[in-house]
Amino acid sequence: MYSLHLTCLPEEVDLLSGELWAAGTIGIRELDAGERITLIATFETNDLRERLLSEFRSLAPEWEQERAVDWVQLTHESWPPREIGERIFLAPIWSNDPTPPGRVRIVHNPGLACGTGEHPCTQLALCALEKFVEPGLRVIDVGTGSGLLAIAACKLGNRNVAGLDTDLSALQAARRNFSLNELHPLLIAGSVECLSSESSDLTIANINGTVLLSIFDDLRRITGRAGRIVLTGFNESELPAFLRLLPDAEVSAINEWRCITARIS
Image (cartoon, rainbow, N blue to C red; front, side):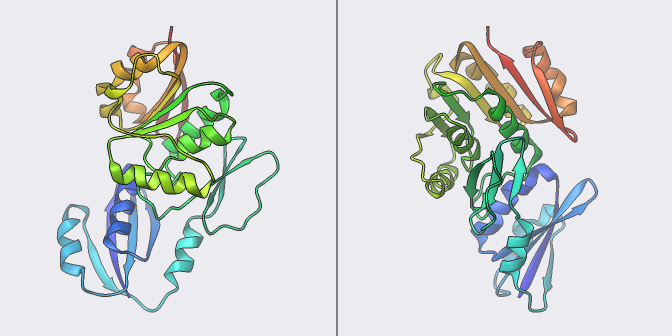
Protein backbone atom coordinates (compact mmCIF):
# COMPACT_ATOMS: atom_id res chain seq x y z
CA MET A 1 0.00 0.00 0.00
CA TYR A 2 1.07 3.58 -0.66
CA SER A 3 -0.16 6.90 0.70
CA LEU A 4 -0.25 10.44 -0.59
CA HIS A 5 -0.05 13.18 2.06
CA LEU A 6 -1.47 16.61 1.19
CA THR A 7 -1.59 19.76 3.32
CA CYS A 8 -4.59 21.99 2.65
CA LEU A 9 -6.99 24.53 4.12
CA PRO A 10 -10.17 23.23 5.81
CA GLU A 11 -12.37 24.66 3.04
CA GLU A 12 -10.41 22.65 0.44
CA VAL A 13 -11.03 19.26 2.06
CA ASP A 14 -14.30 18.39 0.30
CA LEU A 15 -13.07 19.22 -3.19
CA LEU A 16 -9.71 17.49 -2.73
CA SER A 17 -11.37 14.42 -1.24
CA GLY A 18 -13.56 14.17 -4.31
CA GLU A 19 -10.55 14.45 -6.59
CA LEU A 20 -8.69 11.77 -4.63
CA TRP A 21 -11.64 9.37 -4.75
CA ALA A 22 -11.87 9.99 -8.50
CA ALA A 23 -8.14 9.22 -8.81
CA GLY A 24 -8.73 5.80 -7.27
CA THR A 25 -7.87 6.06 -3.58
CA ILE A 26 -9.29 3.30 -1.39
CA GLY A 27 -9.42 5.42 1.76
CA ILE A 28 -8.85 8.93 3.10
CA ARG A 29 -7.91 10.13 6.56
CA GLU A 30 -7.88 13.67 7.90
CA LEU A 31 -5.38 14.93 10.47
CA ASP A 32 -5.71 18.31 12.14
CA ALA A 33 -2.51 20.30 11.60
CA GLY A 34 -3.43 23.53 13.35
CA GLU A 35 -4.90 25.94 10.85
CA ARG A 36 -4.46 23.37 8.08
CA ILE A 37 -5.55 19.80 7.43
CA THR A 38 -3.38 16.89 6.35
CA LEU A 39 -5.18 14.52 4.00
CA ILE A 40 -3.76 11.00 3.74
CA ALA A 41 -5.05 9.08 0.72
CA THR A 42 -4.17 5.42 0.30
CA PHE A 43 -3.52 3.69 -3.03
CA GLU A 44 -3.01 0.01 -3.72
CA THR A 45 -0.08 0.42 -6.12
CA ASN A 46 2.81 2.77 -6.81
CA ASP A 47 1.63 3.38 -10.40
CA LEU A 48 0.12 6.83 -9.80
CA ARG A 49 3.01 8.27 -7.81
CA GLU A 50 4.48 10.63 -10.41
CA ARG A 51 1.12 11.80 -11.72
CA LEU A 52 -0.30 12.59 -8.29
CA LEU A 53 2.84 14.32 -7.05
CA SER A 54 2.70 16.55 -10.12
CA GLU A 55 -1.06 17.15 -9.98
CA PHE A 56 -1.00 18.18 -6.30
CA ARG A 57 2.44 19.82 -6.27
CA SER A 58 1.04 23.05 -4.75
CA LEU A 59 -0.05 21.15 -1.60
CA ALA A 60 3.37 19.93 -0.42
CA PRO A 61 2.68 16.31 -1.47
CA GLU A 62 4.55 13.41 0.09
CA TRP A 63 4.39 9.80 -1.12
CA GLU A 64 5.06 6.92 1.27
CA GLN A 65 4.92 3.17 1.24
CA GLU A 66 2.82 1.90 4.11
CA ARG A 67 2.59 -1.18 6.21
CA ALA A 68 -0.50 -3.33 5.73
CA VAL A 69 -3.52 -1.56 7.26
CA ASP A 70 -7.25 -2.07 6.90
CA TRP A 71 -7.89 1.27 5.19
CA VAL A 72 -11.53 0.53 4.57
CA GLN A 73 -12.05 0.15 8.30
CA LEU A 74 -10.03 3.28 9.00
CA THR A 75 -12.11 5.24 6.50
CA HIS A 76 -15.29 4.06 8.20
CA GLU A 77 -13.90 5.11 11.55
CA SER A 78 -12.99 8.52 10.11
CA TRP A 79 -16.60 9.15 9.04
CA PRO A 80 -18.77 8.29 12.05
CA PRO A 81 -22.45 9.21 12.14
CA ARG A 82 -23.09 12.57 13.77
CA GLU A 83 -25.95 14.54 15.23
CA ILE A 84 -26.31 18.02 13.75
CA GLY A 85 -28.52 20.69 15.24
CA GLU A 86 -31.60 19.46 17.05
CA ARG A 87 -33.20 17.18 14.47
CA ILE A 88 -30.67 15.80 12.00
CA PHE A 89 -28.70 12.54 12.16
CA LEU A 90 -26.12 12.35 9.37
CA ALA A 91 -25.17 8.72 8.77
CA PRO A 92 -22.64 7.35 6.25
CA ILE A 93 -23.90 4.51 4.11
CA TRP A 94 -22.08 1.86 6.15
CA SER A 95 -23.44 2.99 9.54
CA ASN A 96 -25.78 0.64 11.42
CA ASP A 97 -26.20 3.03 14.34
CA PRO A 98 -29.87 3.56 15.18
CA THR A 99 -31.37 6.98 14.53
CA PRO A 100 -31.71 8.84 17.85
CA PRO A 101 -35.30 9.59 18.89
CA GLY A 102 -36.67 12.82 17.43
CA ARG A 103 -34.13 13.01 14.62
CA VAL A 104 -34.37 12.42 10.88
CA ARG A 105 -31.77 10.16 9.29
CA ILE A 106 -29.88 11.44 6.27
CA VAL A 107 -27.83 8.69 4.61
CA HIS A 108 -24.87 9.73 2.51
CA ASN A 109 -21.78 8.28 0.89
CA PRO A 110 -18.69 10.27 1.94
CA GLY A 111 -16.88 8.70 -1.03
CA LEU A 112 -18.91 10.89 -3.37
CA ALA A 113 -17.51 14.30 -4.24
CA CYS A 114 -18.92 17.75 -3.55
CA GLY A 115 -19.77 17.72 0.12
CA THR A 116 -19.67 15.28 3.03
CA GLY A 117 -21.41 17.19 5.81
CA GLU A 118 -18.24 17.58 7.83
CA HIS A 119 -17.58 21.21 6.97
CA PRO A 120 -18.89 23.78 9.49
CA CYS A 121 -20.70 25.70 6.74
CA THR A 122 -22.69 22.62 5.77
CA GLN A 123 -23.63 22.16 9.41
CA LEU A 124 -24.65 25.82 9.72
CA ALA A 125 -26.83 25.45 6.64
CA LEU A 126 -28.44 22.29 8.01
CA CYS A 127 -29.25 24.07 11.26
CA ALA A 128 -30.83 26.93 9.30
CA LEU A 129 -32.99 24.46 7.39
CA GLU A 130 -34.15 22.93 10.67
CA LYS A 131 -35.33 26.34 11.73
CA PHE A 132 -36.99 27.59 8.57
CA VAL A 133 -38.22 24.64 6.47
CA GLU A 134 -42.01 24.34 6.53
CA PRO A 135 -44.35 22.11 4.51
CA GLY A 136 -45.50 23.80 1.34
CA LEU A 137 -42.49 26.05 0.87
CA ARG A 138 -40.63 26.01 -2.42
CA VAL A 139 -36.98 25.34 -1.52
CA ILE A 140 -34.05 25.80 -3.90
CA ASP A 141 -30.53 24.67 -3.00
CA VAL A 142 -28.15 26.63 -5.24
CA GLY A 143 -24.83 24.83 -5.74
CA THR A 144 -26.30 21.63 -4.33
CA GLY A 145 -23.08 19.58 -4.61
CA SER A 146 -23.75 16.17 -3.04
CA GLY A 147 -27.36 17.19 -2.38
CA LEU A 148 -27.21 17.01 1.41
CA LEU A 149 -29.05 20.29 1.96
CA ALA A 150 -31.78 19.46 -0.53
CA ILE A 151 -32.16 16.01 1.04
CA ALA A 152 -32.39 17.59 4.49
CA ALA A 153 -35.15 19.94 3.31
CA CYS A 154 -37.10 16.90 2.08
CA LYS A 155 -36.49 14.91 5.25
CA LEU A 156 -37.59 17.85 7.39
CA GLY A 157 -41.01 17.75 5.79
CA ASN A 158 -40.86 19.57 2.48
CA ARG A 159 -41.18 17.81 -0.88
CA ASN A 160 -41.11 20.87 -3.16
CA VAL A 161 -37.31 20.99 -3.26
CA ALA A 162 -34.92 21.55 -6.15
CA GLY A 163 -31.13 21.24 -6.27
CA LEU A 164 -29.19 23.34 -8.77
CA ASP A 165 -25.57 22.93 -9.85
CA THR A 166 -23.41 23.67 -12.89
CA ASP A 167 -21.24 20.60 -12.22
CA LEU A 168 -22.67 17.44 -13.78
CA SER A 169 -20.51 15.18 -11.58
CA ALA A 170 -21.95 16.91 -8.52
CA LEU A 171 -25.47 16.24 -9.77
CA GLN A 172 -24.59 12.57 -10.25
CA ALA A 173 -23.37 12.44 -6.65
CA ALA A 174 -26.55 14.18 -5.49
CA ARG A 175 -28.70 11.70 -7.43
CA ARG A 176 -26.98 8.77 -5.70
CA ASN A 177 -27.42 10.34 -2.27
CA PHE A 178 -31.10 11.01 -2.99
CA SER A 179 -31.47 7.35 -3.94
CA LEU A 180 -29.86 6.25 -0.67
CA ASN A 181 -32.60 8.19 1.12
CA GLU A 182 -35.36 6.76 -1.11
CA LEU A 183 -36.16 10.20 -2.48
CA HIS A 184 -36.78 11.29 -6.05
CA PRO A 185 -34.80 14.45 -6.73
CA LEU A 186 -35.57 17.47 -8.83
CA LEU A 187 -32.06 18.33 -9.96
CA ILE A 188 -31.28 21.13 -12.40
CA ALA A 189 -28.09 21.46 -14.42
CA GLY A 190 -27.31 25.14 -14.78
CA SER A 191 -26.64 28.40 -13.01
CA VAL A 192 -29.02 30.46 -10.90
CA GLU A 193 -29.58 32.72 -13.90
CA CYS A 194 -31.73 30.01 -15.48
CA LEU A 195 -34.33 30.17 -12.71
CA SER A 196 -37.42 32.34 -12.99
CA SER A 197 -38.00 35.27 -10.65
CA GLU A 198 -39.73 34.54 -7.33
CA SER A 199 -39.55 30.79 -7.93
CA SER A 200 -38.39 30.07 -4.37
CA ASP A 201 -39.73 30.69 -0.88
CA LEU A 202 -36.53 29.53 0.79
CA THR A 203 -33.26 29.89 -1.13
CA ILE A 204 -30.14 28.35 0.34
CA ALA A 205 -26.61 28.56 -1.04
CA ASN A 206 -23.45 27.11 0.51
CA ILE A 207 -20.76 28.39 -1.85
CA ASN A 208 -17.59 30.41 -1.32
CA GLY A 209 -18.00 34.09 -0.53
CA THR A 210 -16.73 35.45 -3.84
CA VAL A 211 -19.21 33.40 -5.84
CA LEU A 212 -22.08 34.25 -3.49
CA LEU A 213 -21.45 37.96 -3.92
CA SER A 214 -21.24 37.61 -7.70
CA ILE A 215 -24.64 35.88 -7.92
CA PHE A 216 -26.35 37.70 -5.04
CA ASP A 217 -28.68 39.72 -7.29
CA ASP A 218 -29.97 36.52 -8.86
CA LEU A 219 -30.32 34.80 -5.49
CA ARG A 220 -32.44 37.70 -4.34
CA ARG A 221 -34.38 37.76 -7.63
CA ILE A 222 -35.48 34.12 -7.42
CA THR A 223 -36.58 34.50 -3.80
CA GLY A 224 -40.22 35.53 -3.58
CA ARG A 225 -41.57 38.42 -1.53
CA ALA A 226 -41.51 37.56 2.17
CA GLY A 227 -39.28 34.63 1.26
CA ARG A 228 -36.07 33.79 3.05
CA ILE A 229 -32.48 33.51 1.91
CA VAL A 230 -29.74 31.50 3.66
CA LEU A 231 -26.12 32.07 2.66
CA THR A 232 -22.99 30.37 3.95
CA GLY A 233 -19.53 29.31 2.77
CA PHE A 234 -17.63 32.39 3.95
CA ASN A 235 -15.68 33.40 7.04
CA GLU A 236 -15.78 36.23 9.57
CA SER A 237 -13.60 38.54 7.46
CA GLU A 238 -16.12 38.37 4.59
CA LEU A 239 -19.19 38.90 6.75
CA PRO A 240 -19.34 42.73 6.46
CA ALA A 241 -19.82 42.52 2.69
CA PHE A 242 -22.92 40.37 3.19
CA LEU A 243 -24.31 42.51 5.99
CA ARG A 244 -24.12 45.54 3.73
CA LEU A 245 -26.43 43.70 1.35
CA LEU A 246 -28.67 42.24 4.07
CA PRO A 247 -28.29 44.53 7.10
CA ASP A 248 -31.08 42.84 9.08
CA ALA A 249 -29.70 39.34 8.60
CA GLU A 250 -29.41 36.87 11.45
CA VAL A 251 -25.84 35.55 11.82
CA SER A 252 -24.79 32.13 13.08
CA ALA A 253 -21.24 30.83 13.45
CA ILE A 254 -19.05 27.79 13.97
CA ASN A 255 -15.46 28.77 14.66
CA GLU A 256 -14.47 31.29 11.95
CA TRP A 257 -17.26 30.27 9.56
CA ARG A 258 -20.47 32.29 9.17
CA CYS A 259 -24.02 31.82 7.93
CA ILE A 260 -26.59 34.57 7.43
CA THR A 261 -30.34 34.29 7.14
CA ALA A 262 -32.62 37.13 6.05
CA ARG A 263 -36.18 37.66 4.94
CA ILE A 264 -36.60 39.32 1.56
CA SER A 265 -39.00 42.26 1.68
